[in-house]
Image (cartoon, rainbow, N blue to C red):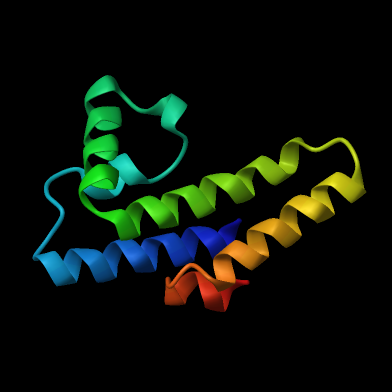
Length: 100
């Protein structure tokens, strides 16, 4: 998860450089669990994801991998990881390709 978090951060930074910044509070709205965010930060996160497809793909990849920890058996977890890995390799997000 640490490597995927770093990959997500790289995507965020690259996008921020491309568009001239994502606005105040964007970094904190995009980090961590959505359940811990205030309503305003959740709204900011959702708006950023809708506005920037690359950021949305990166967020989905990160959250999909986080689901890995919920599986009861190794076989199910392994199948989930293989699915995530395949998706990451095809994601067109260079930091995620390298993290896999």
